[in-house]
Every structure is written in structure tokens, then in C-alpha cells.
Length: 155
Image (cartoon, rainbow, N blue to C red):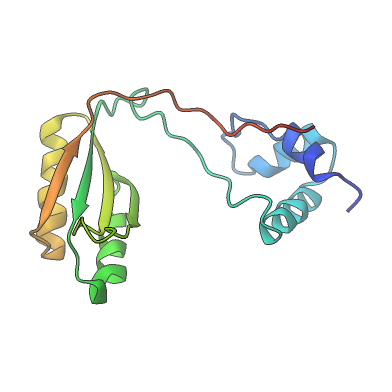
């Protein structure tokens, strides 16, 4: 490969380029081809060095001023199907399964963003109607903590 993994991670940008070919832009900044960069990133993923590359949406800057974490009680037999339906809503940024640890019976979580509290509640009602899931709790945010990108210690 010729490149140290740490060199690539150091040179990866934190503000991912908004482009039809963002990896091409990143590769040029690093001084390699897009194919080489993709090969290196694939290698890093296969080796467990990185899990994923993901965008962070600053939803408040995008005028989505309200959000709600909704916890759903879903039958394990249907969790994959129900999760897929819930994740299909454009207002849902996160949808994931969690173990209740024996004390919490809610096992599917969604993060819903809206331009008002009413908009968030409407989406919850739509999801409930579409999935048939009636057992849920809506947890509203009180405040948002600073979002930061992952940082590395290269020594």
C-alpha cells in the first residue's frame, strides 16, 4: 500500500466535502488517487481500524430545532421489518435496536427531528400507525451537547 494508516487518518478532513465525488477531493488532499484512498479505507475497515465514515448533521443549523428520542416496544420476531419501516421516514436520523438489560422493555429506538414539537409528534403518530406499534415513549431533549469528530493520538 505504501502509505501508513496514521498518515491517511491525519490527512482525512473533518468537514467532509459536499460533492458527487468527495473521496476524490480527499485523495487529492492526501496526495494519492481516489482508488488508492478507497482501497486503504477498505483495508482499514476490514482490519477493524475504522468502523465507518459518517456525517454529523447539525440539525439545529438546518432549522430542525426540535428532536425526540422515541423508544418502542417491538416483538423480537418483527424487529428487523419494523426497524426498516421506521428508518424509511426522512425525519428519522437514527434507528437502532438495544437490549433492555432485563429492566427496560423498550428495544427499538428512533431519533426524530422536526421544525416544531408538533411536527415531531406527528411523525411519531405516523410511525405508530404505519407499524402498528402502540407501546412507546417519547423522550424530548432538554439541551444539546457539543458534537465533535473523533480525534486521534498518533504517538
